[in-house]
Image (cartoon, rainbow, N blue to C red; front, top):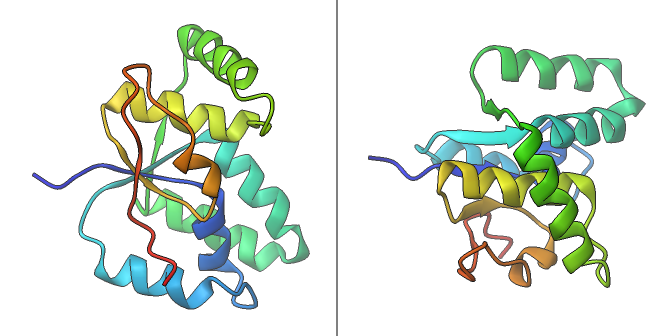
Length: 139
């Protein structure tokens, strides 16, 4: 069975913004990836906001999701409590809502695999103190 990868906004933005310095890496990652991809609605919102320079980029991103490019992990009221706790725990970084939603989503689907350009995921920990494995190689 393939590992489940939860995707942060950075690689998603790079996929749909060809001027992004990480665009070639994001495209290479997508081409070689065979694992299912997941994200959260707060991340989708963040991506759409950053892609606001182009309605075409926004539309292409939403179309890609609608065609199964990645699945959205639903958050429930328990997840919001966990996100609040995480944001308080990591307030010195600070952790934003989208990142908190990704940690909660990873815990929910029991995956330690994340695709991100955000170095904060080297610091964040699961409820069981395990670390994340970033599969988005920036080398």
